Image (cartoon, rainbow, N blue to C red; front, top):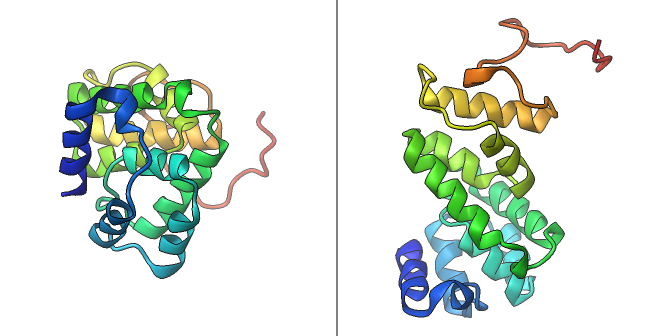
Length: 174
């Protein structure tokens, strides 16, 4: 519903107007439709209009495991990104194009959408997922690798080190 409203605004007014400050009603609708808790809702309401616009422009949070935590992360990302003129609309379009062209499931798509712009750029820079046996799983591996700071990773999105997991090696890196 909120996404449909955002698309209507975008179609009617173009990309620059799509980043116009959202009304109080639009913010309240976003909070309600995404089941955001009181603390995160208050944080969003207390943000400046340009921060609210950046957060809402990233779309629904309904696929996030914890929508309120995802919202707080989006607010943090919006505050640390340089400016609206910095092309944030373009990068979110790149993310949507990547999701569409690589046929990932909605859960993996939601994970990519909820990542910071830096993580999104890192994931997308590794190229398409069409050759992966399971593109959604490969995408999730790339997101994990990007968050861990593993540059590039292996082709096809498989993870380093095989199975196991658990403890960690103290971060020596050798």
